[in-house]
Each structure stands twice: as C-alpha cells, then as structure tokens.
Amino acid sequence: MSDRIDALSHLYAALVGSLDGYRNAVENARGRGLTPVLREMAAFRARHAAELERHITAPENGGANPTTVRRTTTDAVSVVTGINERILSGLIYGEERVRGHYDDAIGASTAGSPVFNVLNEQRESLQDKIEDMKRLQAHLAASWRILAA
Image 1 (cartoon, rainbow, N blue to C red):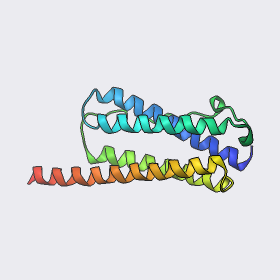
Image 2: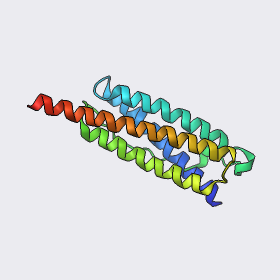
Image 3: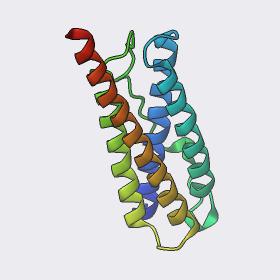
C-alpha cells in the first residue's frame, strides 16, 4: 500500500472510530452535560468521513475499499454525566490526534490534487472546532471558579 493510501486509510479509520465514539457518547449522555457538543461533533465527523470516503474510493487514489479499513472505536467519552473540563480535555486531545492524521495524509498527498484540497479544508475546519472546544473549556473553567467562590 502506498504511503498516500496508507495515510488516507488511517485518517478514515480515525474519523469513523471517533464518529462511533461520539454517537455512543450522545446515547450515554441522555441529553445531559455535553450532549449538544457531542451531537455537533458527531455530525461534523460524519460529514468529513463521507466526503473523505468519496475520495478514497476514487480511482486516482487506488480505489481503496473503506469497509476494509480497520475501524477503531473510541470509548474515551462513554460515560458522560455532566459538563466538566476533564471530558472536554479528552475531546480536545482526541481531536488533536485526528489532526495529526490529517497532517500525515496531507504530507503524503500530491499538492493541488482534489483529495489534497479536501484534506486541507477538513483540517482547517477541524482546527476551528478544536479552538471552539478550547474556548468552551476556558469558559467552563471560569464559570466553575465563580461558582466555587
């Protein structure tokens, strides 16, 4: 398998695995705590996985079959009972790891190719989501300090 196909496959596996994790977390949250953030990230991740899948299966990318890609399901967020910084820290950490998979896939792709452009756009929007979560984390930390005072 070429470096490009390997990097795309690892990224796709990370997207699908984290999508499964977000969906499980939404179910476990039962409408409490970070449910809105988890739902938003599940939808975000589903869009990126579907878009990337179209590019992975394209003939110019070797026509890889994403169903054969190893799927890793994360359960890092499986117990969500309320809003707290630790959960957000875990989400941010996970998204930063996914960002690393984007970096690998971008580095292995040909500049200017359709998949290269999609990867860059998705990475940029992921970075925006990471920054949003960091702002929410800071806001929650400030709120907890005010409540504790």
